[in-house]
Image (cartoon, rainbow, N blue to C red; front, side, top):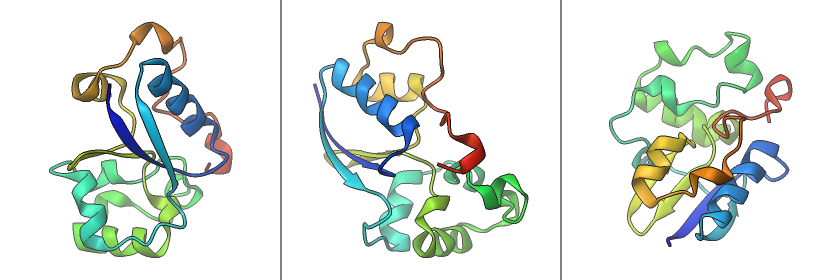
Length: 136
C-alpha cells in the first residue's frame, strides 16, 4: 500500500475512476486540486522525467485537440511555462509517492510502480477521460 498525493481536476470523471482504482487497490490518497496548486516549471518537470514533451499534455484539452497547441513543436521550457500559466494543459493525474512522481495514468506503468488490483479496472481504459469533447 502506498500513500499517494493525487492532483486532479475536481469533477473530472476520469480522475474519479482513477481514484476508485487506487483506493480499491489498497492505496491511501491525499487528493489535491491541480488547478489551484502553485506550480513552477521546476516542480512540474519532476513529474515528466525523460518522457517526450508530447506526453506531458492533456490530449483532451480543447486547444490541443484543435491543433491550436501542438506539443510536438514545443521545447520542454516552453511547455512547462505554458502549463504553469494554464494547468488544464497538464496530463492528469499527477501522482507522487515519497519523492517519486508520475504524470498520467497508464495502467501498466502505475501497476509496475505501486501495484494495482487489476481486476478492479474494468473494460474502459482509465488513462483516457470520458469527457473528451469537453476537455475535462
